[in-house]
Length: 453
Image (tube, rainbow, N blue to C red; front, top):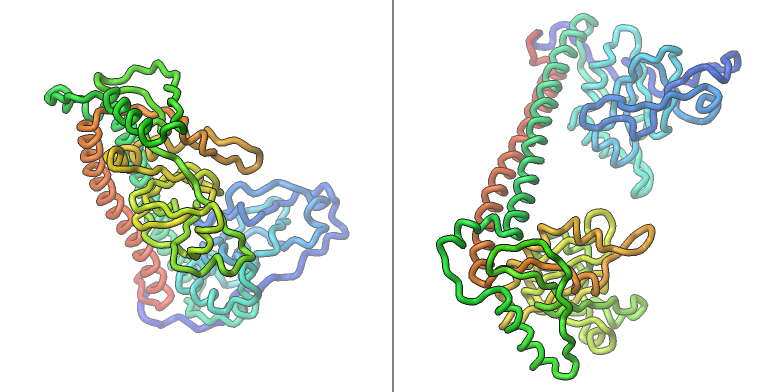
C-alpha cells in the first residue's frame, strides 16, 4: 500500500474501548479459572505477556484489579514502565477472564480494528515520548491519563485486510529487530566474559607466562614485600604490627608470592560529617560516597565539605591516585573499585588504599586485582539484609603478587586487551541503537502510509 488512499484519521477511542467496564461476575463461580498479569509479567523487550499467573475468579476477580480478555492490549501507564515499553496483546484465555495490575490501561479493539496494529502504535518510541509529555501525578508516581490515550489521533487503513497486511509487515520488522538484538546481547555477554578472562589470566600469571620465559628479573615478589615491610617498620615505629601471611597453598609462578592488601598499603576510611551542621557542607573539598565508585575513575564530586568538617570530624582528604573500594552499597556497588583522580574526602562506606613513593608502582596492579576479584571480595561481606565489607576484610584480602617488572607488563597487556574489548563493545552498542532506530523508522513510515504491501 502507498500514499493515503484507503486510510482515515481516527482517535484511539474510536478504534478501541479504553478501560472497558469489568465483566458481570455475580453468576460466575469463584473456582472459575482466570489469568492474572502483574506488571512484571509483561516483557518490555519483546512486548509480550510472559509467565502470567493462573488464578481464579474468587482470588482475583472480586478485587479491584484491572480486567481484560483475550485480544485486549495492555499499556503500562506508570513511569518508568511506560517509557520502557511495557505493552502487550493479551494471549488467548480459555475462560476469557483476565485480571491484572491497576497500572495498566486496557485497550479493547473495536470490530474492524486489528489489535496488533494498536500494539505497534503504542510501542512506538514517538508515541511513548508524547505520552510522557502528558504525565500527571507526582515524581515517582507519574501516570499517563486515559484521556490522553482516548484523544490520540492516528492514520490507519480503513479496510481491516489492509490493517492485517500492515501488521504483518510490522511483525516481521520487530521479529528481525528482536533477533538482531538477541545476537548483539550474546556478543555483549561474550565481551564481558573476555574481560573477566583477561583479569583472571593477569592475576594467575597465565597472561605473562611467555614473557617470564624470555625475561630475567632480579627482585622477586618476596624481596618486594620485605622491602615494603622494612619501610613500614621505620615509618610506624612502635605502631608497626607485622602482617600475617595468608594461609594459602595455591601454587604461583616463579618469583610470585602470596601476601595481603594490608601488608602492602595502608587502608583507611572517611566519615560523614553531621548533616545538621550546615557549616560542614557546601565548602570547597570534594566529598565522595560509595555510589561514586561505580564510575571507575572519580573526577568530580556531587557534594563538598568544609575545612571545618575536616578539622572537627574523622573525615580526611585522600590524595589523587588513591584507590577506593566500596564497602557498603546497594545492588552491585559493594566491592567495586575506583581511582581518585582528584584529592577528595570520602564517607565511611569506602576503604581508601593509600600509596606512597615506595608503593605507587603497585597501584595499577592492585586495581586489576580488585577488578578480577570483585565477586570473591563481595563474599567477604557480613551482616543481614544488607551485608557490608569491613576495613579488616579489605586489609586481610589474599593477593597473588608478581615481581615489580612483571606487574608493569601485566598492566600493559591488560590495558591493551581492555582497549580492544572497549572498541568492540562500542561497536556493539552502536549496532544495538541502529537496530532499534531502524525498526522505529519502519513503524513511523507504516503509520504515514509509506510502506508497500
